[in-house]
Length: 338
Image 1: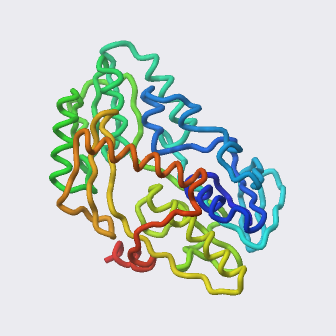
Image 2: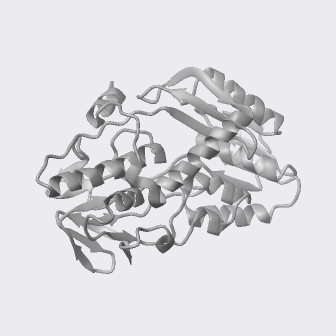
């Protein structure tokens, strides 16, 4: 099996499949990036080694890592940017969505960290995007650098995917931390640094169409994670179940069975507000918020436990991993259209 990508989905698939047959992981970097902690790295609360360990240290012992970027993926074949061709009976496209600026990947986060370290007290930091990533970076930075003036801007408003109750709790915390939250750019101080937290982007690999409900394109070609474009919110919460499910399906097919459809349901959304506060929003399987919200120190505790679990699953605990069931991928996409 060849896995294109070494993020949460790709590594989960590699560990789930380990010992069943040869596993080759294709990735352009020699690091596994624990992306849900990149806001911590950018703000200076963890080191690069902590957020991005060397890839061979977290791969299955019998897996092979090939450094390269896939540009074309066909049934049975992967073509790399440098012209090399790799072949396998099963190929999993799990290249993620780490393209962009801000804290979307290790390189851009490293740049943000360097720029932040160079700011003098009283400097203005403007963070564009008040979704999960922007809020986490703003809160982390306010805690570590209270000498900075932080503005969080988003025309869509603060945390649009959570409940009104959770939004109010986040708003109160951000205000108490001295962060200005606004949906307008008029009248704001001139920023010394602008950080883009408006979203992620997935790489294009020869225009693969959407997979079926089993996460397959047919003929031994599979996908998992953000790049799969299944309609699920881009997150490790969805990526790891996809990676595990694809590995299970490859095992089923290899043993003469039929691939099973992927079913996944969300349970919570977690948002860190620095090292000591957090918000845990309970959600329905379709990711719509429920009424119950856990905040404060309890929210931070749950958020940290979930973050640690995500890393453990991707880096070795995938074989015993289970996830909450939910709608089919096609049902998720239909609801998004309706």
